[in-house]
Length: 131
Image 1 (cartoon, rainbow, N blue to C red):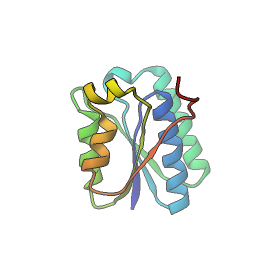
Image 2 (tube, rainbow, N blue to C red):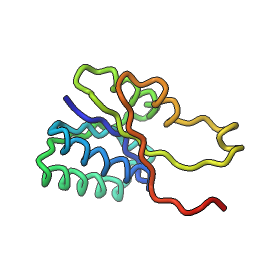
Image 3 (cartoon, one colour):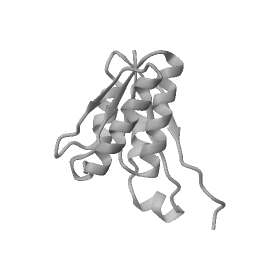
């Protein structure tokens, strides 16, 4: 079995990756990291992934990274992976949006939560009070 996580080099992506490492360690299972997308695949993002792989290894979690292809839609990829036989949990990062943002903008996280073929664990970075 395995835990899958989509990684983007943002606060939401970082907290999702760390939570996925923790979940995989707790479940004594493998970790599948999806991403980052081609546009976000910078040397800094690769350094973050290298550090995450080290943290996973330190906890005894076998981890693999699957790079996204140029035109892969992150939401579609995560949903597709959630239907694979060995994936027992998907971890995603979410962010706070305004009411207008919720109405107008689509949400990858919302789509994954609604369409995934396995349980989804949504995590968020610490936020302050509404302003």
